[in-house]
Image (cartoon, rainbow, N blue to C red):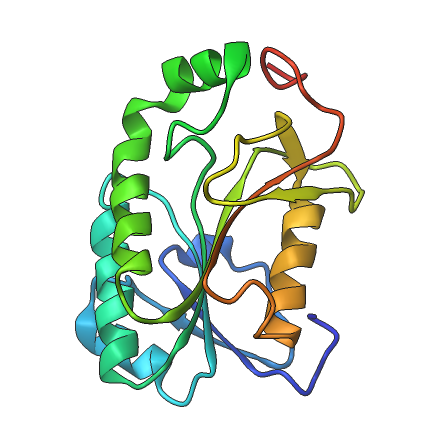
Length: 192
């Protein structure tokens, strides 16, 4: 997608140290926080799709700010990355391990998902397994009401799904999907 010059990106970044100087030529960068309503409104002006990959104890507040700005700016398409385990959908020993490691941290992620699903926006929620840096695109999808599969997935795989949705906005419209690498069922991720 970075090579697709027909797509213009507006990147809202909290931390200027994350800038590499290699940002795509088809991107504008705005430094700030999604909780700054005025700045968020500016960032969403003339956008077709919003992609959010955020974290923090206030993730639900961040999601609500994005939803409000999108509704006020008449932007309908949202892609939002959250986390596996927000619905207690991870079965077995891995589910127990996942809850023990990040269970408490997932509460604002669940509230964010609930707000997104109730927003009336054309959303896609992605719930990836534990992320790896493997150079591979190998994944399977589980639905909102299905047991989560696998323990890991590559960032490249998740990026591939996100890029596909951006290029084909009807894909996974109104969906809340889990993403994992097939065949990685275990008691915990291999790198833990």
